[in-house]
Image (cartoon, rainbow, N blue to C red):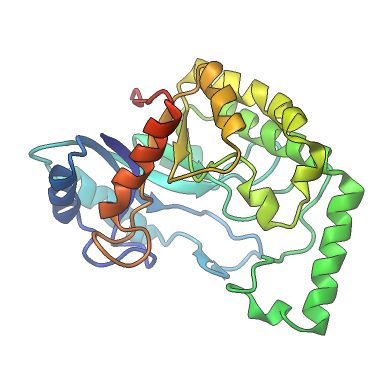
Length: 285
């Protein structure tokens, strides 16, 4: 078993127990033979500040610490790679880590943590429409802002927004060879649903058709499609599998056994991949 998405204790989202030694020991216990231990890396936040909602601009001293500790650690029983989880920023394919920093690690796990800037839908309204994170939107003014954003998505056109997301992924893969995995993929539409885009109005067959060029590019470049568990739109995964995409399972671990995203839950994603007969992927470095 492989898991290319395990978080390191230096980041505030990960528990202090997520050290290289503890991660390796837990991987051995679970039967994971290859792992990537990741540091979050964000060179900028959408609001231009050091912090935005639950994301933070990378502190240089923490980045140096991660690199030094990775270089010093010698795993005994598993293959262990270095990497970052960073954000896809816009339709041009910009990502949130400079090229010179990418060269210091083995892989980039590319996530969509917040809505990206699209040609058809410029990111002019810096909101995260999830009331668990932003309860301030649960009032009259907040609801007005959310409705204004919903209308912008309607005016842009749901199909155009999906095309923009696909273009962004493809441009990033073409520009940055260190992008080896697309994280949190599910059916590929989670970030758009999070941002209140009514993607299902487009129809599943058309959505899959829009994603097919991305699927083919991922197969060509060896970029894996990451799954953390079940996915409602299984037709999307079946089509990606048909086009040669490889998949990887992850717990997106921030803890070893408890808390949010425990590494001990890795097998849940493996079971789902097995149930779908999806092709397993191994990243080439």
